[in-house]
Length: 84
Length: 224
Image 1: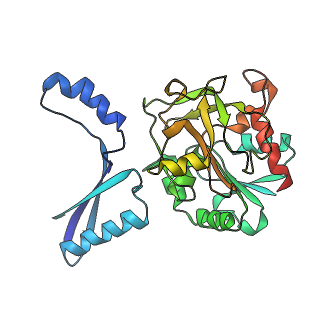
Image 2: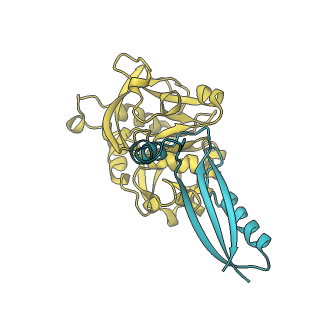
């Protein structure tokens, strides 16, 4: 089976994100006053052949960790899987 | 002999080479794939934009075989110095703890700064008399961060300050934790620094005639 695995890398809540703060201040707040916060991250998409969703997800989590696609001191990650 | 490692995208290797020559330190520029750690007593990772700074500044270089060899040298007690992008490589590879995030104002900053010398037990600052030194910085990802403030306090080498040595938010160019411009490991043989000592090594190109970078680099002579 082929899967798309999406890796989202974003600053931890305790780490300031000036890009998100700028977008919030100069764009978002022009349109709405109920958006409390904007944060910017990085999105990486992989196409994987794997036996099941779990294998695909585990592989990307392993690579993200061991290949330091993110720095655990400052970032957190989200991994999402969908069928091709 | 000190090796200056050049990755694709490294730009400051020739400046570091010239400054080390001026300081009387035997040195050679080596391409990253040809780097043999057994030949050298120390290694400098110079500034630039290794591998285009893709993903994050320094992160691709950090995952090369070359950096595994640099780690081995660090463990043997040899000198490991990362300047600017080199510092980013050192934190990305875990040789130094922490991270270098985009500057808080998201701008590329290029200017001369004053730096307060905190530790004088590292290979670059041992026995240094001066308490405040001046060097230029030039980076967009220099906001030092670590989740362990005690670690940062114990290991910081240089702090951004004013000309009188006062450390404050006003003298913090990039939002670094505790105004940290340079940090070293406990042993003092692995040092990362955002300021460029090689650009503060010649009177002709110094804004005020000081050559504080050269003073630091000269200290490498006895190990080289």
